[in-house]
Amino acid sequence: MGLSWPSPLHAIRRCWTCVPDALRVAIYHLVLRFSKWWYGNKYQYIQKTPFGVYIKWGFIIRGHHRVREHEAAALQLVEAYTTIPAPRLIDYIKTDKATYLVMTTVPGDEAFAVLSGLDKGQKAALSAELRSAVSQLRRIPNPHQHAICNAMGGQVKDVRIWKNYAGPFRSETELNDYNCQLARQIKEELADTFLRKHKLYFSHADLNTTNVMIKDGKFSGIVDFDFAGWWPEYWEYTKALYIRGDRYMWREIIEDAFHEDYSQELYAEEKLWDFTSPWQAFACNHLAPTGAAPQERISAGASFTARKLSSGLALSHDIQVIKINFVRVTMNREVINYANHTIYLLLSHLPGQNRYHVGIYISLNGDVGLVYHATGFSGNYSYDGHISENIQHSTEIRLAMIIGHVKETQLDMIDHQIMPGVPVRNDDSSFTCWSWVKQALRDLRQAGVVSFSCEADDIETEARTFVRGVESRGQVGNDRVITSRLCS
Image (tube, rainbow, N blue to C red; front, side, top):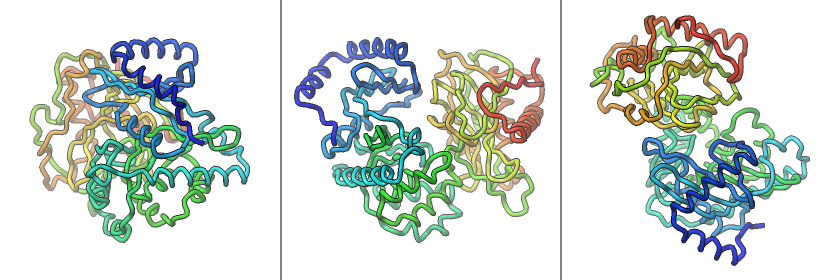
């Protein structure tokens, strides 16, 4: 069943990696250009090329590597210890500007595209194949000092955890404590689950319908080992159900693949997903204090005593000035294609009617960008600024308003780091996520990043008006463009 390389190809691979990095990168660039023209470009950073080879690549942006070496290490472990049909590593190169992961292909279609056409016997066979694959992965030993880590012993990566990267962790307890930062108020409710001790296994950690391949009605392999590492045993199961849209059919297959009872762990995970919701734009806590009227109010308020600009943005003045010009909207199950080097005001839907969290998003390159907002996960407001690879896939975003553009050469001149010690906790219960955003808009205008002639309160009013219209009409897609009434 495995896709192990014949010995002559092992020799070819060893010889190829002896070629100087600069020459290999130059050849990969030529292959990428030809392949995009010949095959098209289904995924922005994953390209099909001739001879059954795929190239996964990404720019290094503000120290963030979109394609990391731990995925290459995971592929090597899978090849060495299992017979699972998975991509075989050909090459991994890191330059000062980008990273490249070159690997073989796995034949077939993504499961989501063919799942509805499988009969009962084919679904049962798929479950059995997944059960075998998980069993093989669990036999891969962990040689590292940390119990929960990636294939190289470093930080784990997963969209399920806050800020996508965390750890490594010495124990499951450390991982649980980290995951509950955004939901401390339900930790006691879930105490029985958190106190349970689980075995720690090597896991793919993303067995969803886009990463399981099927050919001619049969399981043909597993792709995308970016999240792979040593995780608690239930993680493989709960993460397989961490998907968008209707998961009923897939859940039947996954439950048949796992004979263990992880229902209690799934319940706890789904509770936590209310705070770090699947495909939510922001990790935030909007639980209002007792008697609070405003729906955007978080668990406690705070005044901002930030250094530099009062919103916490430390900005260069050498930024292209433009006016707020139009609004783009989307609804659930619709991917937004954000324009590069563009500053957005995002409204993300929260449980309940007409409840939204608001923040600023700067799209840097493709699906990589900076999220910046005020959140109350720790019991008082604090700044949160981090790199994201998942905003474009968020099903919770209801409104994306372009408020500015940044030249490519000026991206590194904007500092969006969290400012330590700001804000301080106080009794100002009127502070909301909108309070920070409006101050940020004023600071952006003062710094010359954006230009508008109205008050920030008017922009809030317009955004709320637009988003109500979007919700009532059910508008979808990137083709919807609404011109701001506030701009000349």
